[in-house]
Image 1: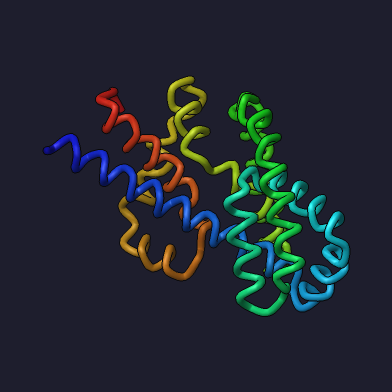
Image 2 (image 1 turned 90 degrees about the vertical axis):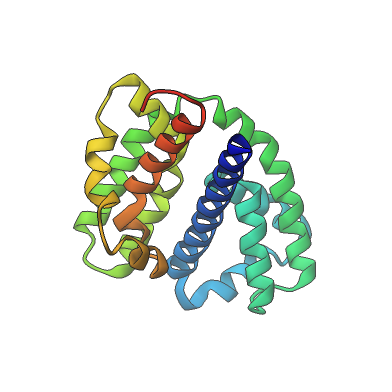
Length: 204
């Protein structure tokens, strides 16, 4: 019974982080595009074949066809895209997801840390909100449990010590609610890795 509850909690936690990450990524992309978003979508999806290519490219960039699909559904909901345009992009997302498997076999620790570092530096020196959103867009997909797991196991740095202030932050839920991912992303990455190890019976 206890093991079943642990699995359920792990699934719910993983699903929550996954959905939060998708919403965060979609929000960042919309903020970067600004008011011109509808015109951009209309141009790149005016042809169904071009829409397929767009779906493939976006899926490769965000490394998830689910993220692409959720964004497209959101765009249709907001009347930024019609059903015909959406079908081409979703088809491209499903094609692109086959290539994501090749990206996943790359050592994320080798490439993830420099990319996350670039994103953090850009975010620190950006003077406007759009620049900060671009930086978040660059590094957001790098804050994954896999990266946290690899960094912890390799001993590159002590992610637990780095994230401890965030774990004890009384405003953690408020930051999550207000979509301030840049303030809590390290905590999300480390905490999920810790939970994964606990559920697997490993030492944290």
